[in-house]
Amino acid sequence: MAEKMVTVVIVLGGLIFFHELGHYMLARLLRIGVRTFSLGFGPKLWGFRRGRTEYRLSAVPLGGYVQLVGQDPGEDIPAGFGPEHRFDLRPAWQRALVVAAGPGFNFLIAWVIIFGLFLFQGRYELLPVVGQVQAGGPAEAAGFQTGDRIEAIGGQPIATWQDLRDKIATSGGAALEMSIRRGGEPVRLEVTPRVMTRKNIFGEDVSTSMIAVAPSGETVIIPLGVFAAMSASVDKTAEVVRVTGQGIWKLIVGVVPLDSIGGPIMIAQLISQQVDKGVVEVLTLAAFLSVNLGILNLLPIPVLDGGHILFYVLEGVRRRPVNLRWQQITTRFGLALLLCIMALAVYNDMHRTILEITSDAKR
Image (cartoon, rainbow, N blue to C red):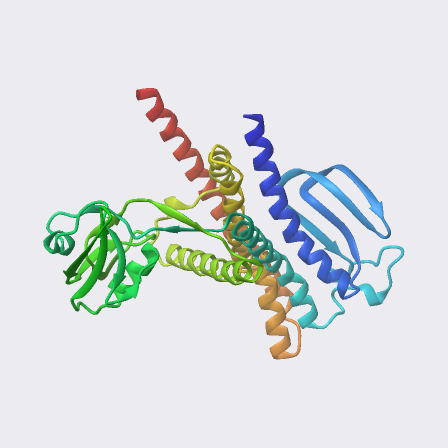
């Protein structure tokens, strides 16, 4: 149990640290003064001062912050800093870059994790081996059997299950000639895909061409060199960003139910579950959470990084700052919205926990 709690703290603390490190490094690069770098909110538990910046560990571990010189209008310049170090006197594009660097570092660390996994573990691919043939489907009518390994379609080699799915999905319903290995012997079958409905990862019904077979679950590890791992990790990170963005949008428009929102308890539970499976699973989840943190912070909601970036973009377009009164009003609205979302997430966490405890008690 202690090992799981330490892992939860390390993963969440690490993601928050890299997020704030992005703000910090861009500010330093642009020679903007940094007053405080804090991991956590609230009362200071421990800290030290190096140069003109105070580094601290605070009591509430659900976040962190970097306090810049001149971050708030009318703020006095602390000793050791000059007007040239003020954040609020910098061009809008520089302020936007400093704010965007936090989410940017979340995407960067996700890519680094995925790159490391690909480089040292290789890429896991599902083999095109049939594990189940659906009754009444095109595959059953064509004579497919459990254990069949599909080696080629129309003379084109099939190496992975994804290759198989892509080829069937783009068939347009035309008959496909498949070369199969069955019990060591070659077999040729012709199957005509049928447009069928299945659930996607968001629970939506989508129509696509299928032959109604399921994979056996057999996998193969494909070793990757440095450059291949770099390319594959860029593709995988972009895929995670795309899917996560789609998920958030579908949550906003009501496709994904609100009870799927999770908070710190669910995140801690997910990390704890991955600890039992191994380091690779923990790192994979950390990369996914890092992308989520980056995207959520880029939402154009005042209080979040995306809200600040929106103000700076408007300032750059209008060539004058957004009215301070409007900034204050929208910031209060954004804070209220964020608190509501957090309350909903905590409620969902508690509800799921109670249901799990009740279910366990009945067994």
